[in-house]
Length: 229
Ligand SMILES: Nc1ncnc2c1ncn2[C@@H]1O[C@H](COP(=O)(O)OP(=O)(O)OP(=O)(O)O)[C@@H](O)[C@H]1O
Ligand SMILES: [Mg+2]
Image 1: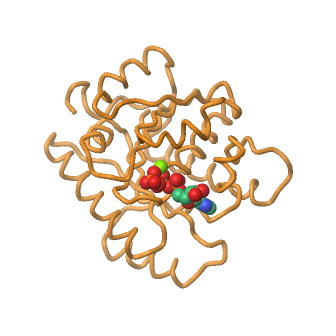
Image 2: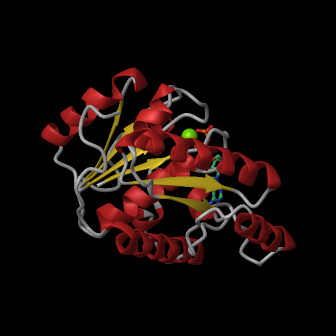
């Protein structure tokens, strides 16, 4: 199963969600590989030393070579789940990563700018799949939501509904457990200790994994034939 985290906007939580979701899958016993396509190598820096789990591996790739690289990863790592984290810009890699994914997650904070950008990415996904005559599977994921339901969140949900953007019911809240990943090298599921921020993050990540499983099942065939992208 390949999941792409896509947004043309920077700082919406692509890398944080990629790392956290990978931790959730690895904790549940799956082999997970993250392909880091960001030239800043954010997730590679955060998780590259393998502190979380031997089941969670990360590698960087040149976005130009993504199609071939996916084949290499499938052969060498045989992951159950591959997560692709991309840079916050439009480029060919975004199109390839979307076209090769079973599911594209579009993270967006509860702001007009983030949701506007998410709608643009959704249009881009639809146009990519239209070219292949296939139905895309994508979901907006609200990220960095304040734990106490704010008016901003209420307006964000209304805007998402108005734009008819399919969205996950689960939201990723603004939590210290997510902010710490870069410094500790540990995702919420591997953070250890008994802390509310870590426990609550793990619960919402598991809820997200369950929603994804309901959408695409544990193992599904590639959406587009190799080479189609
Ligand atoms: N749920 C969250 N709670 C708290 N902080 C968060 C959360 N999600 C992201 N952040 C923080 O926001 C910043 C941006 O997040 P992140 O790097 O994941 O975004 P991005 O979309 O990958 O950005 P870029 O486009 O630059 O790659 C980071 O400092 C991260 O720690
Ligand atoms: Mg990033």
